[in-house]
Structures are given as C-alpha cells and as structure tokens.
Amino acid sequence: MSLRPDLSIISEWIKPGSRVLDLGCGDGALLKYLQETRNVTGYGLEIDDANITRCIQAGVNVIQTDLDAGLQDFSGQSFDYVIMTQTLQAVRFPDRLLEEMLRLGNEGIVTFPNFAHWYNRLQLAVGGRMPMSRTLPNPWYSTPNIHLCTVNDFEQLCRERGIHILQRTMVNKERHSKVGDNLLPNLLGRNALYRFRRQ
Image 1: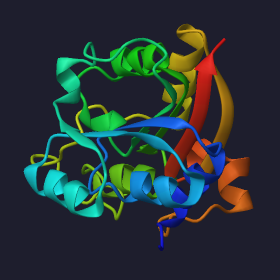
Image 2: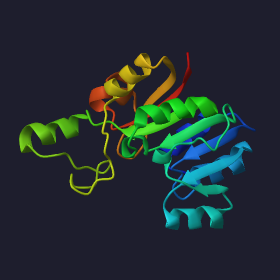
Image 3: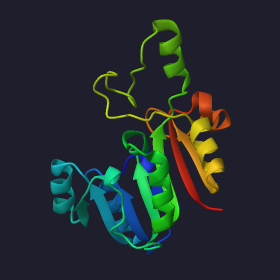
C-alpha cells in the first residue's frame, strides 16, 4: 500500500503494536497503513460522511465526531499516540485539543501548513492578498483553516504549555523532507510535522 511521503514519515515514528487515535482521520489511509505495516490498533475520528464511508470500506474503525465538541468520551492515557494531520488549523480551539491529545495519549503527532513559508510571505508583501498555494488552496472566504500558525507560533505554544517537542520535520509541497527546509524551518518549511509529549 502506497502512502503520501509526509504520512510515511509519521508511520516511522510509530512503534509496532501501538494503540493509535487518529483525529480528523480523513479517508483512513494512515490508520490503514499503520494497521498493515505496524500492527497497530485504534480508531479514527472524522466528521465528514464521505470519509467515514471510505474508512469503513477500508476496514478502519471510525467514529463520527466533531473535534471541537471535545474528546471526553475517551479515558486518559488510552493510547500510545494521538495523531492529527492537517487538522490543527481547522479546529476552533487548537490549544485545548493539544492538551486533550496528551491527556489521551503518551505522545502526540501533528502536522500543519506553515503560514510563515517564504511563498506565503511573498504573496502578502507583493500582492497584498491572503496567500493561496497547494497547501493553502482555498480563497480566504471559503477556507476551512481558521487558526493559521507558523512554526514559531506552534513552538511558543508548546513552551507555554510545558509540551516537550521530541521531533520536528519540515516537508515541501511534494511532502518530501529536505535538509534546507529543516535548517530554516519557519522560512523554508511548507508543512510542519511534530512529535511531542508532556514534559
């Protein structure tokens, strides 16, 4: 089974036999891959009806829920990893959701588009308009992203909340990791991948 390069990086961070909760799991591709290659067990949480159908067809355990409503139905430390890919910027209270991720799991993994990427800065500076790109494809008035952030913003939030960053990898528009993207992550990294835990 083929997997997007950024999701492949995440899969390498997951220990075999782990319990995983995938928040905003989409079509379940990552969880399905982890089940087949890492022997993980777990659930995906998703709100979109079409994606839920895809998860069921793929044999992924999925629960329909709105992440903004909270995760109180799950007991603390029920999972080894709680994953949220390309969803952090689309929830109403990303700071609370990070806290919930670490209440439910030993480690959290998130990915998000880095709004401080040089191309976004250039569009704002030269064009004077909200950036659009492959990672930010929607115009400002119809974007699902309501809390855009930068690498620096996310790391500051982690420091404030006592969250220890274990790994950070930046990926480009093809979702591959390059050395330069990681040397100047806030400027050159298009998408950020983080693995973290409570200090």
